[in-house]
Structures are given as structure tokens and as C-alpha cells.
Image (cartoon, rainbow, N blue to C red; front, top):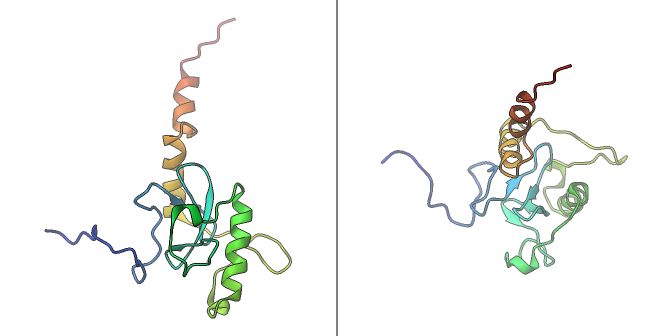
Length: 138
């Protein structure tokens, strides 16, 4: 037995942020607390718990999870929620007070998102081979 941690409980905490959930959802690169589900909808996670219409204390029933079409809408909701929390000073926000976006460099999340796009058929690796077989003659 090696040191794998596959049997984690639902109260994920001290292990640092994960970039992918067991249901296939993944963290959006460059954003804090914003995730994308397999249906293409964005949602917010605070300390490993999905934000619902009851906050983060109301449980995680799928029908109660707040979903957003646009990533920026989810990011603003994340900022709004963490700004009201007791950890507001230490929180990573997505937007500055003037409304401009804070961009974070996420190497592991970017790699996961790239794989996610390829699985959906939108990755560069699916386009380049198709272009390389085109032979244009005059």
C-alpha cells in the first residue's frame, strides 16, 4: 500500500485546494473559488463546500447549489460571500474594489482545464492534426 488518499471524507480541508472533483467538476484556472461542472455551469466553492441558496451551512443538495452561466458572475458571488465572512482580510478575491479582475497564475488548474477542453472536443490537439492533412496544390 502506497500513500494514496482515495477515501477522503466530504469535509475536505487541510490538504490544500483540489483541482478536480469526483463528479468530474474542475476548478476554473485563474479564479478563486469558481468551479465548472460537467453540464458547463459554474458554481462557487468555499473551503471545499459548494455554495447553495442557503449559504455553505445548508448542505449540498444538488438542487440547492447556485449555478451561473458566466464565470464572472460566479466569481463575483464568491467575492461577495467571502467578503462578508470572518476571514475576509485573508481571502483571495477575484475582483479589485474598482471592479478590475485579479488574474491568478494556476499551472495545475490550467493543465486540468486543457484536458477538460480536449475531452469536450475543443482542445488544440484535435484541430492541429486535422489541419496537417490538408494538401493545397495550385
